[in-house]
Image (cartoon, rainbow, N blue to C red; front, top):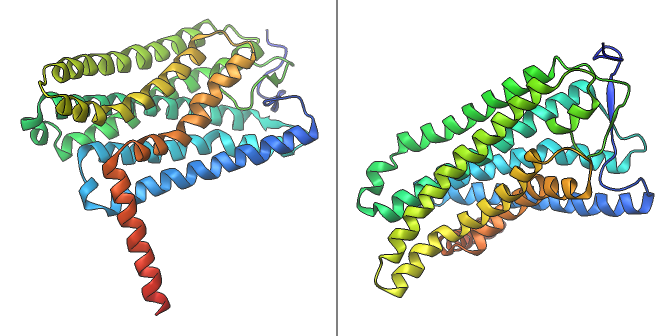
Length: 316
């Protein structure tokens, strides 16, 4: 039987990033607060530009706007609690709060994977079937793909969290991490976690293999089409429309898949992988899509110009 359960174990201790050395914790707080504020600013600005600039009302930017909203949501699941713990002496989180965080981390990770695969399909349709692009990527289909991404990810997270609710936790309450993720709860449980681990593995493989296969086949056809273009400028232009998305895919998938497939040990590598996909990726996605995209940079300039003109008009 379990040494303790949800009624006796009321909280977990999150050890965080480094041992509780006050001046280091303060420096980390300042660093991650700056990153979080930049993440909020970058993604909000991206959403604003896409919404207000009519030249960006296309399927690609429709998906990018939803990716920015998802990154905003994603970073807000873990970073506020991490910032709170960096300043507190007792880095505790309630069992209920931990399970809620597990659910939303799992759901947002799944949404990100689904949206990136949908965006790969969009690039495939644009490059491989340019004449039919408007028909293939209709507004109705785009909306369904986005809603489908959210529904699939939340259902997957719900199934895993419902199984986790039945876990009995022992007296060991320490999580060697800065946030609650499902693999981190398994070593704390006195229950048999075979079913939970099998479901987690199936979910990870569903997102890793299912979405990765769509991305792989989309880019296989894209590369084939680009290589068939005779002019160098044509190839360069076609590739430039995919480079931002490909960079985002590598950053996210490279760390997220490894994090959920590697055994939980609380190692520095595990923390680095988690920071990569939960902190760094939401921060750099707006930068990747703005710095490497001429249309977004032009739209940003137009938006800022309109804002400055509105300010000058109000002053007059």
